[in-house]
Image 1 (cartoon, one colour):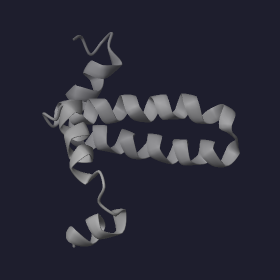
Image 2 (cartoon, helix red, strand yellow; image 1 turned 180 degrees about the horizontal axis):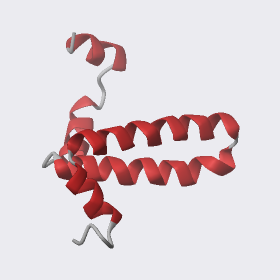
Image 3 (cartoon, rainbow, N blue to C red; image 1 turned 45 degrees about the vertical axis):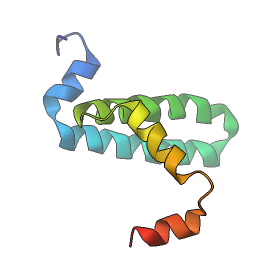
Image 4 (cartoon, rainbow, N blue to C red; image 1 turned 30 degrees about the vertical axis):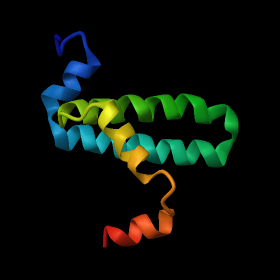
Length: 86
């Protein structure tokens, strides 16, 4: 990928700190969209998911890894699961 013509390549070239920063920015924009009205949520959610996928890729994580983690949590209370991480 050519950073001169690819935003994704630019993100990878910038490195994990910049990618993580963009995920944070898009998360905030998604929250703002949720408070502004449903017509904005779809677009901002797409941006958030895109940047999250870039972050996963940069970290060597495949979406199936995340889905597997979610599968492990199925049937487990979110309260209990969170307490187990502390």
